[in-house]
Image (cartoon, rainbow, N blue to C red):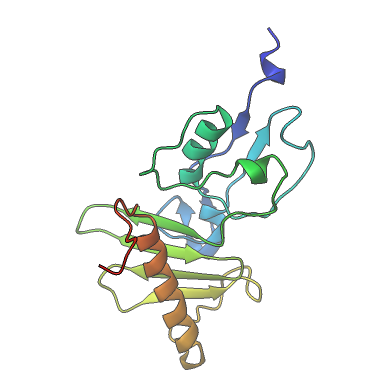
Length: 181
């Protein structure tokens, strides 16, 4: 029926797995690269360039808007993801400047959010003084946690602010201001 030549196919998963990295096994709410950097393969003959690799930041919430857009269906305004079609189709190198990773369990267990950009990763634990801050460029194995280092206080503050703004940016503004009223 020729479906293989006219079908977008995506291979991915929702999380990685620990095999001893950071002293952990299995999965869990810890946002090290081994857990959040996922395999992601797309195929759509004639649209997705064959053999091309990308290091573009993408999120699982981007799948639905990208699928809808590719199918020619309008993306609902309240959808949190970003249409990645231009990245997948090789028209742009990137669309996102950051991703947010989160785990929300029951109120008595870990509630964590992580902001990741091309270079840095900051993880904030709900109602906790501790957290994690990594320079992924200098420390790709995430060994040196910079959270409590005084010389990184300004960077930590900047990244926490970016996380807050990114969270706020996920909420649609149903009635944007058009005047100074």
